[in-house]
Image 1 (cartoon, rainbow, N blue to C red):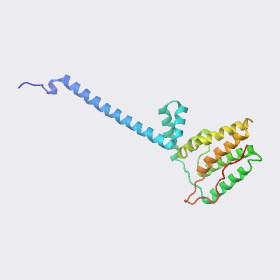
Image 2 (tube, rainbow, N blue to C red):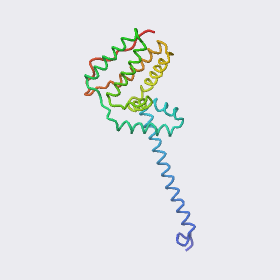
Image 3 (cartoon, helix red, strand yellow):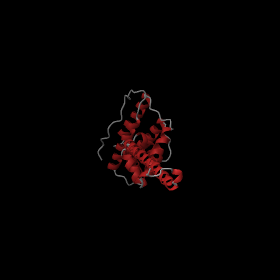
Image 4 (cartoon, rainbow, N blue to C red):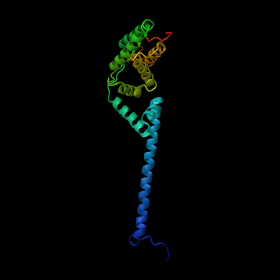
Length: 205
């Protein structure tokens, strides 16, 4: 009977070809699975970090490195003992904020400096470690990605003010930026909200 001889032991070349095809197929499946996982990871990080995702990509200049940084932030913050505030603590912080805001008209520079200190104190109370500013911003970005840009903007104005280069309008905007993060950090446990809330900044330059 004529036909193709499939006796692999008698056809070593065919054996090598089939083995090569099998290995190539396995590699292709592994590569496809890896690519799919990377795409899912990218989508997840984009959804979680929002504008902070693009900020980090621009900062690192490389999407893979940026995503590795964001994933590392998540793991680091997961290990922290971040807690919510008691209603009494939340009310105390809100009252302190309203007091500093009332000082803005008379002393905008002091109000901005106090806003920075108050955010710092609130982060400490919540359980965030107080390393350098960039580390604080990175930690905050995991839980509050929508307002970490406000924190950076406020800090930039505060540094300009230390050099005597910030205008009153810039100082007003800094207080607004600090307030955006401050309100997010003012989470209360249990679910009851504080009796006192930070007031809107409406100071004219």
